[in-house]
Length: 165
Image 1 (spheres, rainbow, N blue to C red):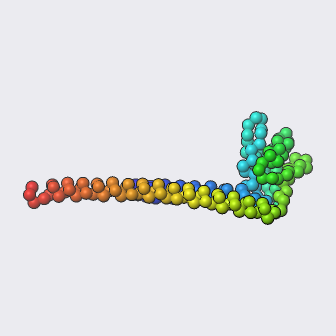
Image 2 (cartoon, rainbow, N blue to C red):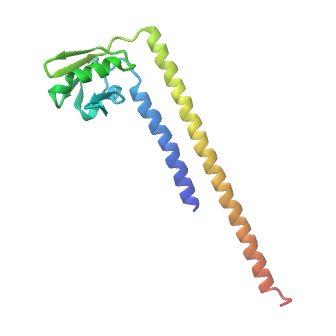
């Protein structure tokens, strides 16, 4: 039971850290990364579908992402989804390939991304504290039950094998 509590607490904390890691990967840093486009959903036959399920996304160079859709008919839908996203990116299409060139970061956008990163880090801290608090309370409850069980067994043993019997 003790190991289960510890393992559950570790897993909860690791989930929070993994979530933070994924969020950091989605924050634009000036370098091209396919993770930037993971949150983009494309209207594909009246269904919002993640972009990575409709096309392959690769890094062409430090500032360019190349998107190659598996179906030619979806190229315009992908372009539209990228333009409407909150990333502020402008796709350029040449044939079947959509290229997204990442603009240089301005001081203002850099500060905005730093603010977002700090906010996400704080959310992760709160989540980890919450998981730790829950684990500690489970642990205290377990130890409390164990002590009361030990007392009960001790009393039973003393009453059974006491010299007055």
